[in-house]
Length: 275
Image 1 (tube, rainbow, N blue to C red):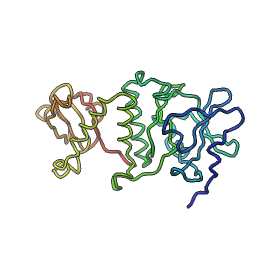
Image 2: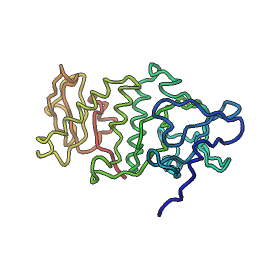
Image 3: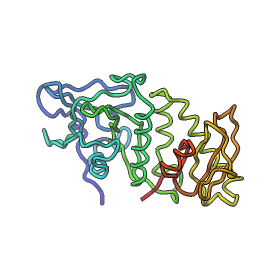
Image 4: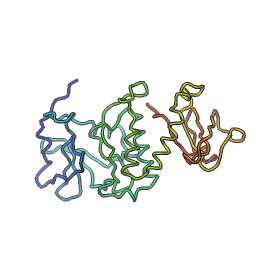
């Protein structure tokens, strides 16, 4: 089904009088034309339509509302929004929220918050949706939890059977944000080291390449089969000086919290659990 084209004029259409177009960072506002601040200064209104491609002379409805309903109230997608219709346009409305890094310093982010964002993206990808644009994160003013701010370019993607370029996998976008915006470069290097364990051709073509894809790290002590009792685990020596890991533990399914805690294992890498 071909969606009805909407007039390009919507890019400059405000919800009403006395709404103020917000200043937006470079590379933002490409799709919708940018958000507006309500007259009382308490809410941000963003159009639920945008350009599908650069310089096309029309808008189309975005998928943002669809995705927010799909992810409703899951981690990273709080029910902190509503939809309004005003001045011939549909709007996504939220309370003004601090945005990383413009109005919320990355120095204030904790590791738990960054991991919260990572899990939110993995949950989104598991439902075969991907961002389609840069990752933008804000802090909910009521709960102080981070959430995915911008889904105006979200598109359906494929699973592991699809070409990599169209897979619903935003790991690269998360790593760029975590390193360049949030300042957690160490986490990104750790994720890449763990992913490399199961990405080489020797592993892929070996006896465990099709079954063992979840990677955990023993960072406090060496671990080995002689005394560690983890079902179906493969233990691989790591280069401590390079990675800060003693042993990589590779398993066919995610470890439960009890087992991971018993052996002081840290999650390193795993495939998207597509639904």
